Each structure stands twice: as C-alpha cells, then as structure tokens.
Length: 401
Ligand code: GLA
Image (cartoon, rainbow, N blue to C red; front, top):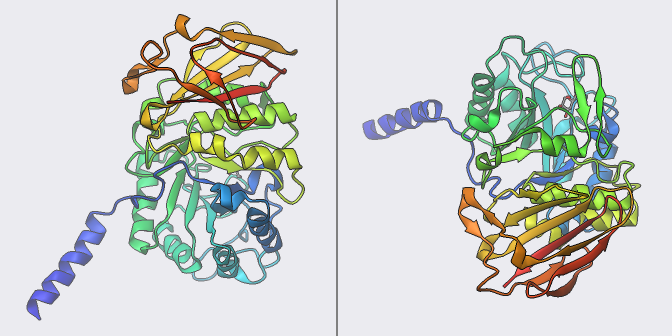
C-alpha cells in the first residue's frame, strides 16, 4: 500500500516535471486541410462536415490527408463565466465535441487554432494565462492538432510560451500535434524541436506566384518568396519536426501548371501538406494534383530529408531530394513566361547533399527515371533528360534503382 502511494506520488510528480511533446505523431510531414486561406473566420459545423465528406469522396483520405483544422474565428469574443473558451453558438450550434466526433467518425483527425498571446490575430480570446484550462478543454472535445499563433504576445518569450502550451497539452493527456505559428520571427528551427512538431518559417502565404502584398506592419508572400526566404533551415527538419511553409494555395486561382509546381515544391521541402482550398468546388485537375500519390510519396519519404536547390540559373529552378534506399527526387520548374526545353546531361553534373552525406552515383549506377505527374517511366540516366516544360509548369521525377 505504502509502495503504491509512493509510486503514485512519483508518477504525478514526473508527469508534471518531465512534460514533453508527444512523440511519434508526425514521423512524416502532417497532411490535412485548414480553413483559413479560403474561409477566414467564416466557418461553421456544416463546412467541417462537408470537408470531411470530401476527404473520403475525393480520395484525399486514401492519399494520406488526415487532419481537418479550424483556424481563427471558431469561438465567441469572450470566455464564459468559468473562464472557458466557447465555440460560437451560431457557427457551431452543437458545440465542438460534436464536430470532432463527426470528423473522427470518418477516420480523420480534428484540429483547432489558438494563440499564445492575449488575443488571436482576428481578435478572439488568446490562451495566455489559460493554457492548462484550455488544453483540458481541447482534450475533452477530442482535439488532435493545435495550431498555436503569435498575435498580441507583447514581450513574451516565444520558446517559453510554446513550452507552456506543450506542457499543458501533455498534462491534459490526449496526444496533440503542436503546430507552432510565429512566422519564423524567433527562428524556431533553432529551438522548437522538443516543443512542437512543425513550425511556420515565414509570414502568411497568399495566392500569387511571386509577389509580396503589404498590409502596413506585415506582408503576405507568394510561393517563391516563401521558398526563398530562409536559408540554413534544412538541417532542422526530419521525422517529428518539420519546417512549415504554410497552408497551400493549390486550387486558389493558380493555373493547373502553377498548382503542380507549388505542390511539387511543398512536397520536396518536406513541408506539411495542408490544403487551403474549398474542396466542395475544387476542379478535377486540382484534386488530381493534391491526390497524386507518387508526389506525396516524395513528401512522406521516411528519411524526411528536405530538398536542396541544385540550380536556379537561367529559366529553370532545379531541386533535388534524397530518398530512402538511395533513390532521389528531382523537380525542374520552368520560371519563364513561355515553354522551355531542358536537356540535362547527368554525367556533367554532380548531384549530392553534403549535409546528409548523400551523392547520386551516376558513374556506377544507372537510375530509371519515373515521371511523377504523368505516371510513366521516361528512360534512365544513361541518356540526357530531355523535356519541354510549359511556363510555370514542372517536371518532377523519381530516380529509381
Ligand atoms: C495569422 C496566421 C494565419 C492565420 C491567421 C488567423 O496571420 O499566420 O495562418 O492563422 O493568423 O487570424
């Protein structure tokens, strides 16, 4: 009896003292959907149900998408008399557990949005000072993923603030993926590995190929500025810890070619693949891109090594990514405004990743080349890779043994 009490005491103390992030939840980049890019705060129960249905109907669940995440705007402007967060009763008349239950009934997982400061970016209550209380509520509702933002944080220390929420989630006991969203301001790739499972590396994405849109104190960024914004962050990513290049804009006004390039790049960078479009009205071609299992397999490769730029000279962006079993993925994006032809002589280039000590061994091996968007084999590395690529389109290949 005495021993049991001591054991119980020990367990209680260690749970509090040795809080940690939940392990094993994001061994490959998380895949899902988030409401913000298309709906902002205009969200509700029916939308979540429709999206969950579409995950199944469109084959997205089958392709690996798992999380449905409600971003900012799901709660009322004030906490209730107990200090609890309250789902907006007009948007979520049956409460949040009912929403989570529906998502779970489809074999999917459910996520919510919070903020480390006193208010969210859209002005709803932040979690500051209520972390343990809110984490308990999330667990009661069945939340599996928390996107945790950084508005109204004043002089708060980012590492400490995100650690507090990590510990609160751990104490609440329900495994939750913690998605850190402080826009790269405090260089989370240097400290967040033991705190969260993914961290945003830039400010907000916007649906343009190569632009910056200013909003006074902050900017939104197109696809290429986001890709180019950070250097030296490759080494931070790997199983359980991912550089997050933001929710995708695939299907949000791009050409089909641009959608393919955007999706290829997010896959190559081992970014979480979080769709941000309206799945109820998505075109066949958009769904085909998002559900492309051969491209997704590159993103979900078990080594979790992010791509590196091989060259961006001339009209082409060429990126390479080491994969398991000594295979490689390669992406060639035509940045020009008209079609361009590539003629790539494998013997003239040394493709390698010094950081992970991997080289494409062209001299001793002949790799078969698989086109991941056309789903066909297009020769091997004994001959030049020749292709005409449309403006802003991509050739994405897998080099196989
Ligand atoms: C910030 C985040 C966005 C989104 C909004 C919601 O801007 O970076 O991704 O969550 O807040 O208000």
